[in-house]
Length: 178
View 1 (tube, rainbow, N blue to C red):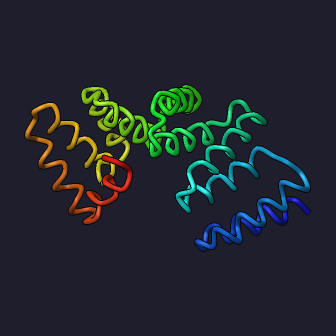
View 2 (cartoon, rainbow, N blue to C red):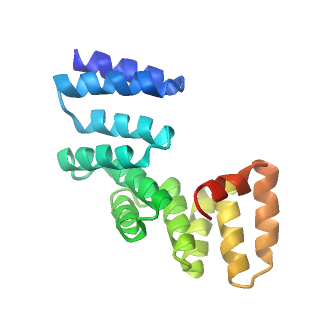
């Protein structure tokens, strides 16, 4: 019945009922520990901005499935948000080795480079992410910030385009410490 608990957890997760999802994932993990179960519970913790628990769950998922690209990607993001930047960068790089054309991972790695004041690298990763979808606010805004930090006034138009897509994008970046 572990799969049933996990599936119901996924349904709660999709509805934004993260505490109920976590309870079901915990029951599923008691019955049958799995990389996917830890990953799912980590995602629910991530959605609640409970980054330490999310990181712990991604650690367990990776321990059970060493090539779990999505777990590396999500752990990268969680670590980046809390400022554990070098391990986050290593996670993003591993995720990109496993899934080289993942725009979300490129977004995350660009964000890490931005936080590390490696602005050229940030612009490069955000450019790569935007090639997949040029209408995404997060990489547009991040590229704009990185460009401005490099003295490139084209960053202002990136930031304006990002705000047109997502009016609260500046607040989102501020919430993540940028």
